[in-house]
Amino acid sequence: MAQQLWNKGFEPDQLIENFTVGQDRELDMRLARYDVQGSMAHIRMLESIGLLTREELDQLLPALQDIADSIERGEFRIEDGVEDVHSQVEFMLTARLGDVGKKIHSGRSRNDQVLVDLKLFFRDELKHLAEAVRKLFDRLQALSEEHRDKLMPAYTHLQVAMPSSFGLWFGAYAETLTDDMQLILAAYEIANQNPLGAAACAGSSFPLDREMTTELLGFARPHYNVMAAHMSRGKTERAVAAAVAAVASTLGHLAMDVTLYMCSNFGFIKFPDELTTGSSIMPHKKNPDVFEIIRGKCNRLQSLPNELTILTANLPLGYQRDLQLMKDIMFPATSQLIECLEMADFMLQHIQVKDNILDDPRYDYIFTVEDVNRLVLEEGMPFRDAYRKVGLEVQNGTYRPTRSVKHTHLGSIGNPANPQIAAKMADLLQRIK
Image (spheres, rainbow, N blue to C red):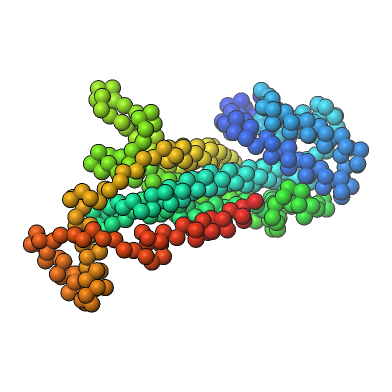
């Protein structure tokens, strides 16, 4: 039977206990460092308002620091029979310090204790996600500059459309990641608010100094209204899920392009043999399994916002046990996405880009728009007349492309605006700290 700090003299049925606890003990290991961090801030505040003596604080802080050190060394564990990380920390303090260890819970509930742990956890996860996005962004920008003058086809409806370039292709994904970073920043700002002091649902009769714990924990501000703090359970997760899904959408789209362009029918890019996989019966195969796995994982990650919305849609204000299930959904998600980003960055270090793709006659018609525009610019022909002239040449089989591409405007083949895009990303990243 799990040890519970709120035991009132009776024990729930073991089947009930197992069902309601679920995977919480395993998942809570990722919250351990944050639980100790929150407790250290909380007891400093309790001492400042007279609920702990200086001597008691001087006993508690080193004991909590010892627990924090054991967590960093990988030695901390939630013992058999202890329900969760919060109970484990308090039991360890009580075993070491006696009644002094029982005093750390004054002025807080497990509800706001869990909230602050999750806010700190998601804040760090979003920082790690932002860093992984930045690394891939830098890789894409470098590739955009390296291959900016190498032309490739652009497609609409999966039909050959107009000339593009690898500079634009890599750069497009880089700039799209800046849009995703906007959502990471928004989620970060939602997570970066202190719920400690909200207690079980409506605050506490103790004279808590919530501004002090906000500063000690490095939050930007408190969740001022204590009930709003509790409403943030679920709201924070949905914001993080939206950011994760946005990055996953971009990365999954890139993975799809890579698998398509590696195909022998395209042959635009390739990777060293050792970064591909083979077939059990076809000796020629060099499969893009890494990007297929990335695509599949990213497609699954895009379901997160919907899953959380359905889980929390009809819940009333205040804590409900349903909210515990969000940890099962969210905790693996950020780690999985970061792993996909890091793998994509590793693979793109080794990408090989084909030269002179548009010399192939199959791409002759890709230059029709260029030739229409050339007639307008150089001969002063009205656009509709130029369009008709080139169109008739295509229909009659007399069209011969000039194969000349002159794009100079901002964001085009000749001016992909990579420095401006880098500035956008730098502005966003400096706000996530």
